Image (cartoon, rainbow, N blue to C red; front, side):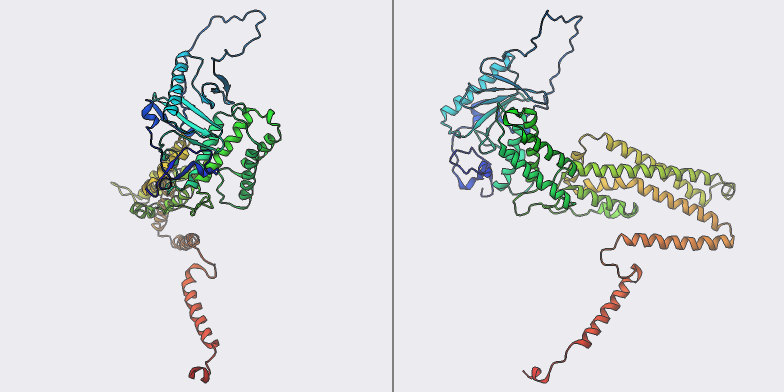
Length: 540
């Protein structure tokens, strides 16, 4: 149990740092009382990340009116009066939420539509049961600024969590499986690491309930956010592999927005301003957690893995040469984009833009090649060279080129359409990283349009050369032979440049020979310049 961590209820006497929300189990004595989930049926602990505001999607039947009359001088269109003990608020995005400051000694927040009697009665029944549980079991709640959040979940349960604004964390009244919000990072969880994600959940809660009357936003929050954005912009300006989740233009706009909000008087800051500030903080602290900020193995650039890189399988070893080693290039790019199963939207969109442009170009080139093959087969001499009951070698090579060209066009268009309609593409790529097969098969798929186009181009060239050499015209054969040798040399030259990983002193064909000569010459020169030992030094 020495490595186990658990979420606990921070008290006013506990460490005020964010890591006070978690501590090592072996270093404390747990209070033994019946879990609240056993005491209150259907009550379950949740986090702000699991909050189902965006999943409810309430459906209303259409209502048709022939007429909808307004009374003379009607100018009051205010919402209905909220029930006793409740105050209504509206999120800037439009969601209604409610707060009660009278049912308990601390505020209670909910999305339950308390205008309706049945849901309100059920909600208040849960509140009374929670208060009764706290009293009967003498649970020592923190004396800090706390609140309780309740929601009715689609499963039929009632979700809850407490918020400690002083500690900037969430807590529960029984054991809570923290893996529900820590699963994105697979390491040994230190309290200081969990604190980043706990703080992220805290800011997400504030984004859901942003009205300053619910909880005012301090200037210290904006100062912290400004400092984060200052560093993020500087890092993006001076580093091509920074870990910030946004490009520099977006970061600059975020900083300008933060400064505009900070210039407002606290009384002038509405929920629209505060909700955006809270959202920024949520995203940045979540990134701190993903990159192990402050830990031994913290990620300092976005291409740096913190877990072992998966080894290449036999699948890639076999099929990569057949596809002209295109899959290896795609695999390297995909691994850089999805480091440790973490995919940034900006990186994925940039990669997807390059891929779709390439696939469109390959489709265009394949169309040109297809037309060239059709024109080649229409040459009378090519058709007459075939035996009566078969086809000639140039025709067969051209047929192969036609098939590969059509395959390149079809696969290119299909991949473009597939990735333009994929929902949550970042999730799609992250799910592929759980095994070596996921990214390798994707790399093989992405390289098919290019490989088929290259095979089609090569087979068309072969068909043309066979036809030319069969002509037995010596000048033509000599010219084509020289051109072919030159072309092969140029291809090898271009290919060799992709394998360069050292200083370029000599061309590739002479590199090993010259390195061996330089090494031998340097050893001989070193021997001539080495000083001889004196007789006295030898005798001693």
